[in-house]
Image (cartoon, rainbow, N blue to C red; front, side, top):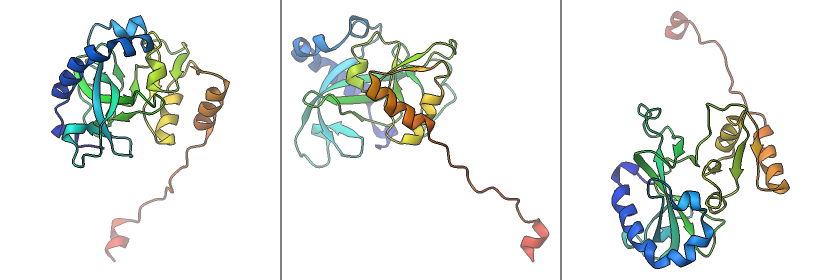
Length: 210
């Protein structure tokens, strides 16, 4: 992923917001009223250059100009307060209503099942409600699917199966998936055992010195 401390997320999102008006008629039917009218700006449009490793950069800023892919951009902001002491590279839970912009998720218009992160800090779109541990969490299969919801569920942005499993296990009240196939996929990921490391006692200091 990109070195997030070198990226002007606010500046890039401001440019994406300016481009939104031109594409409004195409985007509006794909987004729920709750997310479209969120208290803080959430959506923008960019010409993105995807690196093939889950990251992207604005086309004009890319090191190799291979052509821009017109993409919807979703702003991800860190939850106020609880993430104040968490720093990169520890990922953060993110929400719609929060002050700190930590990532921009790009979704190509022509391939809405794909997505990429600008910094890699965002683990999810939306946030698990930890104060409601018995409530099932709606888990969408992609950011594009999440945009059609009311903002209360999540879309998992992580690619690593272990990271995805950790997020799913945090949904202690259960998970509501897109459909049966998605439910089976998530169940398979969450149910795989976590390999334990080899654990042994350290040699006494005197023995190590000898």
